[in-house]
Length: 117
Image 1 (cartoon, rainbow, N blue to C red):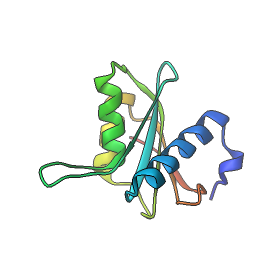
Image 2: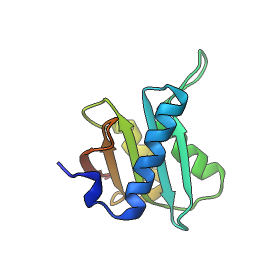
Image 3: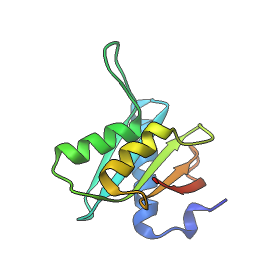
Image 4: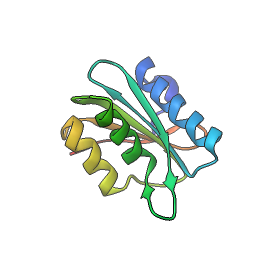
């Protein structure tokens, strides 16, 4: 297990942003991604009757819609024990298989760091 205090400051930042989105919106997940220019995109779970997206897929979609060409990293804050394969696929599509994805609990403690590949 990796403590968030051991992380690169930019990775700590996206965990903090993801955690804030989750808390602010009262949703099950918060996510943030950082693109190749250092810009961040933050999102929460979307749960409409006609549209359901995880927080991470929403953040990736926001990055794409804003013109991002790649991702440097992604973070999810959730009670979940593991990342969803579809979420990793979205990160992989934009950032490539080596893109790191951090999974943290609501307390911001990183439970896992995996690659999108």
